[in-house]
Length: 289
Image (cartoon, rainbow, N blue to C red; front, side, top):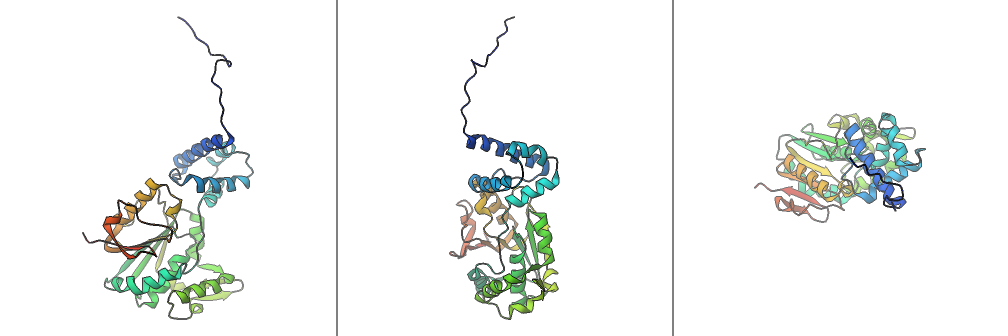
């Protein structure tokens, strides 16, 4: 039996840049996160995800992603810090007021034809968008005939959303958005000031269900009349984006509405299943056949 040995001099040279090594570390980290915690970030856009991960790493105390992985996969608290660094929780009440004005004028008349309306706000972050819809539907006379399911991947931010408490300094900007979005009352009617915070009216919370949901891996909510998912899928690679949009199509009732962010659009394969209600604002309606 002949035994062959390979010396260090015979080995092929490894010439990898720091960026290439880090890319491998990130892939291994994301695979470990998926296998350990069930959160799947593997199909998120490489560039934006890398930026957020490096921002987290710079403040984590770890020298590299390889060093972080050993601790992160065994310590849920460290993972929660990573999750907060990965997810994007930038939102505000009545953000993009033109969309809410369009909802009042072109979508609400259709929703009023149903005895009860169910709406899914996917990627709700700290809840402002869900509360904005609750205010709009209350003003449009829906009473108790609606339920909003607001979901996000980050349980910590969901807890904050459920409290319905926001900095009082944001109320002026929220008020301006509300007025531009066709508000029919005084925005101050919907909250009470408590020192440096504003507490939203309790009745708004009673019509919203906040729940943890991972768009990359979890299933859909069935028979929705409207789905709102804005400025979330811009962080997804094309296959994941198409898969999520397909999930929205499945859960929407015929004639249901899909509201995407101003930077979003339907994938080519799904576009034939929808008609455009407001192309510039990216509101679509699922065809009946």
